[in-house]
Image 1 (tube, rainbow, N blue to C red):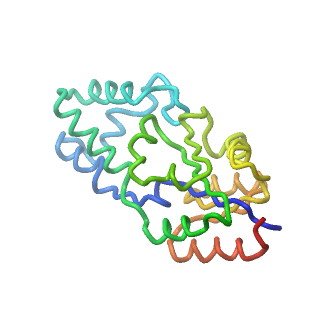
Image 2 (spheres, rainbow, N blue to C red):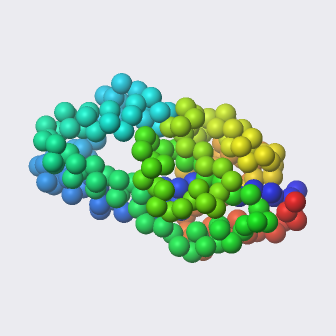
Length: 206
């Protein structure tokens, strides 16, 4: 069955996330125990789900500032570190392989995201190389909801069985397979590229 589109996740796939950047240093700075950031400012305390776009970036900032009793300057510094952690660094070999698939395949991103993600991740220039970028917070749907896979296929203009997908979360990979996609769980860059390439080689692209 020919593959016509390749879709990647962002965090911990195309982006390498360094957990030593956040929140650990801020837990130490604020005198919190390991895991204390999430306990002091739990996501459940927000008025809505950031991944579904139910709160804004400003709402999250205000909530964290209030929960952690921070002044404006400290909050600004913390948010800068949060976004430095969130965006991470680019997995260059995976990116080069991905971009090298153009124009033979349509390219897409499917990411469970938070408000502000597109604006901060613009540094990677993905909008210049992708045919569709689906952020959960912008569409009000998140993996593993089957609806977000259907929406992504629609935006790419392909059928589900024509998509190869790479994600690091098993439940998201399984949901993609149930939606008809060919999906691989990402653990290692070289291994993932080889597995995805095998899928692409199993049939000629359209």
